[in-house]
Length: 185
Length: 263
Image 1 (cartoon, one colour):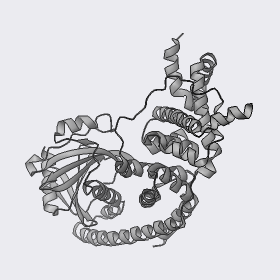
Image 2 (cartoon, rainbow over the protein chains, first blue to last red; image 1 turned 90 degrees about the vertical axis):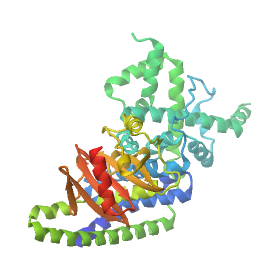
Image 3 (cartoon, chains in turn green, blue; image 1 turned 135 degrees about the vertical axis):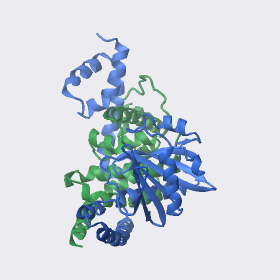
Image 4 (cartoon, rainbow over the protein chains, first blue to last red; image 1 turned 60 degrees about the horizontal axis):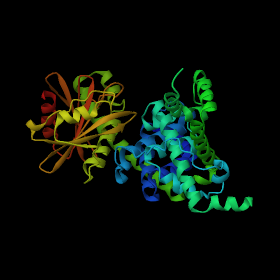
């Protein structure tokens, strides 16, 4: 049927454009390539089934990422399930170091950043990835996570701060803080 | 004037929105003012800004490109879905034309093709995902319908009264929240003689009630269908849509549906 073929072509075109974003997010969420591929495949089929209902093609990216994220929380999370109460030990306004974040963080390698990102609890990780790597708006993130805007704010805040602490720890471990002091001598 | 630590708690929840420019204009000045006077909150904001700036600066190298093979795999998946859809439609077309002959109502035709397919496909897929998984992925394990109903409160927009199906010999195992189309819905798992039954409960608004082969019971219609070798009974009661999935004969599912409607 012609209408059907046109729909498939439109979908394929959108998918080609956003495939890297989808795969990358899938990989960050599942933390392994095997699950990432399954998740991506699964999400694409779900998206295709309701693609006819998507009214504004300009919103396709957010919409695809939303389906991917929801599919993850729906189906894939159980494979690596964390306790329902999220571990969040309050850092209570602690000053982590005396050097500006940007200078120290700038020394970290991509793999070290990825490693820190993967340690975040998944609800926080999802919020941070969607905001800072994929550039979605709070509204789009709220839809993807199925939570109110206020929750997006707090998950992002806490997620980024947890990440900052992990990055500091990595920097200290790798001697990037030490090195800096040596430079200044 | 609000006490400072109360203010800290408020600002703490607003820092991300402040940094991202997602804070309503009316709240910006207050956050700004507090950050100027409170070193502790300023330090939190700096940590957050540091992580944010780093991720955004490395965005391109942190994002992994999709492997070539995945594109092929997705396309094959779409081909299969399309083939399945055609088979399903053909089946519906036959059923619908028979119904047309019998009833002769034109309106019937449009409702048959108005995507009954999605609820059926999605609930069967989720049944496969949860019920056939030994760990089952339940968020709440319980055999008590009352406590599971309470558990769903606040987790869903709808009030779910978990039916007791003991009359039909089914033991409740537990439940979880899952997504269907664009909504959060309740997933309930029951068991009988080692076989698992999935019951999905969702807000009916905006979901097309599939019509076709159905039977009436106490003023409710129970619709029977099958997909990927699983049978389904779908019914509606008091604004909620129920979909029961299992690899059991349709008559048996209809009996369970009846038990649920009477519970």
